[in-house]
Amino acid sequence: ASLPSTQDWSLSYISGPDPLPSLAFTLSGAKVKGADSGGNSLFKYQQSQSTNTSGTLALSGMESDGYRISTTGSGYDIASICGPQPNYLTPGGALTIRLFMATHTTNSFLVDVRASDGSLITGATVRFYGGPGGTYDKTRATDSCGHVFFDALGGGSGPGNAYSITVTKTGYTTYNATGINVNGTQAQSIILN
Image (cartoon, rainbow, N blue to C red):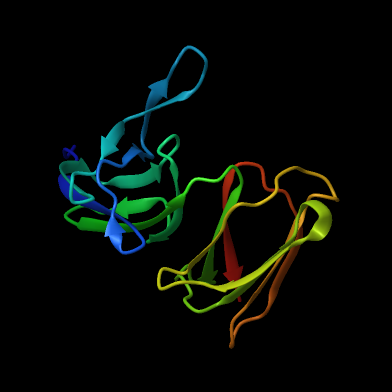
């Protein structure tokens, strides 16, 4: 049997034009080493990290794995991430992740739009509308990372609080969905055919 190889991994946080120094986040791998007494998964790699004064972090000696980043309690939400989560670090590879942050709001919705082959689509038009009282209606284009972020949303569930979404891009079939309840920080991947 061969031993797992170690790799390099780096992360940069940017909000607007300025990097965010000392931004706390949790980095979790997908590999499970067991379970605790309550049956919750114990991940082989799960650590709290923080960016340096330049808003970056470089880690070495990382095992190949699929890594997820979460910013719970940091005061920020992930508004875009160049590279869909989980971020896969392959054997012998290096990985640089660029995150774009927004000030945390109680309810937000991050959407990534992909082609059927999994590639992220830039410039797709995303309309997100409805919500409590039916008053929310914003249309935005996916960024260079294939994401769009809607924040400061009203929360709740049920027909009177649900949102709808329409995603269009020339050359793809239009995507429509209704009944989307937003409670807290949520994310969704949408596939266009």
